[in-house]
Length: 205
Picture 1 (spheres, helix red, strand yellow):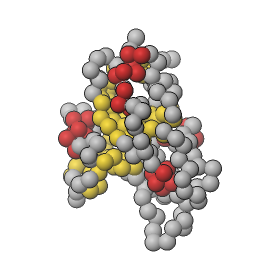
Picture 2: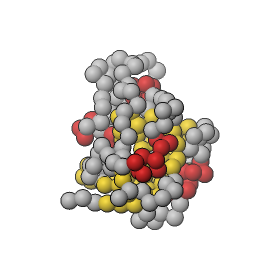
Picture 3: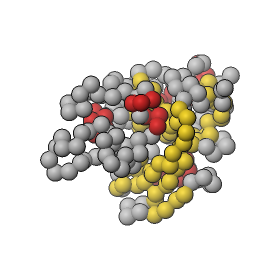
Picture 4: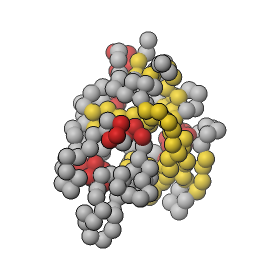
């Protein structure tokens, strides 16, 4: 069965080698602690105000305050994967907002289901080695017009079926995009997505 939704907002990030290494890092790989267990979104690319807009007036969101800023507890669905989960997103420091608990080897891991290797997400051949990031690995969150929240990812391809949809998400696949780049998209026209299609969920007709 196909489930079609209208897209309200999208937040995306191209992972870096550091992100990819750390979300798979084995215990004891480095001295001095476990290291990064989250995925950061730079505030210079996606401001705190845009995150606030992304979650604003959604009844399913629980909002709290942390040491550095707001915390959002998000009921998150994953494209092409059954089941939802609660994910913590919070302002970690002035320069970034992060998705918590993404290191798969942590006892407190809460990897987004869509971004789990059991569901097809890329993983390193050797988690002890750095610099194994696949080229153009993109993760994204979206909010629907009926205020549901979904996660997806794309690897070196445009996750859209038609030219109009490609244009509406152009910022996600611009040739100038590079590791670490993040962004916020508010579609300027009707953009739909198929919650069962992992590879090309976005379309306009």
